[in-house]
Structure formats: C-alpha cells, structure tokens
Amino acid sequence: MTDKDDLWALEKRFWTEGASDAHHLTAKGAVAVLPYPAGILVDEAIWRNNAVAQRWRTVAFSDLAITRKGDVAVLAYSVSAERAEVPIYEALCTSTYLNDDGVWLRLSHQQTPNGPQE
Image (cartoon, rainbow, N blue to C red; front, side, top):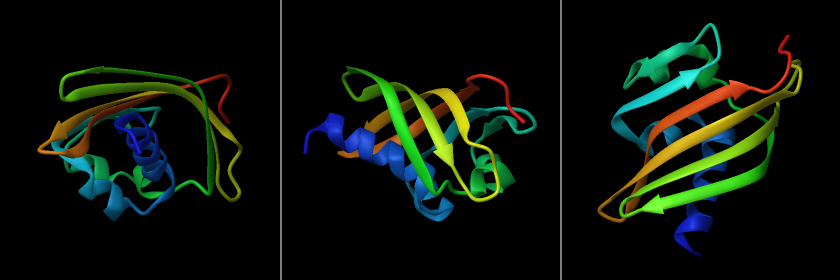
C-alpha cells in the first residue's frame, strides 16, 4: 500500500470505526470544525462531542484530492454518509495529517454540509 492508499483507508476509519480508535489516531491538540451545533472543537473536546462519538454505518467518498508536502498531507473530498434513522449526510471535507515517525495522525478535520440539512 502507498501512503496515499493508507491515508484514504485511515480517513474512512474515522467515519466508520469506534471513537476510541479514531482518538488513538488523532494528533494531540487536533482541531475539528463541524456543522452546528458542534462548531470548533480542539483536542479532548473533540471526543466529548456527541456528534463525533456516533459512527456512520456506510460512507462513500468522491471527488478525491490529495496533496502532500514532506510530512504533511491534506485530503479533500465529498462524502455521503449513512446511519440508522438519520437522513443521508452529504458534505465537503478536508483532513490534514502529520506523519509522526512513520505514523499518520490526523491534525485537523473540517466538514461543510453540501446542500440542505434536516
């Protein structure tokens, strides 16, 4: 697997696997910018937010873009995500990763809802 493949697989894990796994793969001091009401979350506040704790059953990424400069990589994409009893969630997203001694850690994540949200 290439770093590019690893990063996309890691990004999918953040959407679908448990919060404890995602927490372990997140850099200390990370920032998340999520739709209302979550807003801007920093470091441990990310993991105390109910919206972050809930995982998605399925996700589909499209319009993939990635750029890398040294030990930093930025992923940009559209997501369509589904979980029980919630309308399909569509958003434009970016995530920034830092390669810390061979381990990719997510440093930031941002979501902009794509279209009307209920």
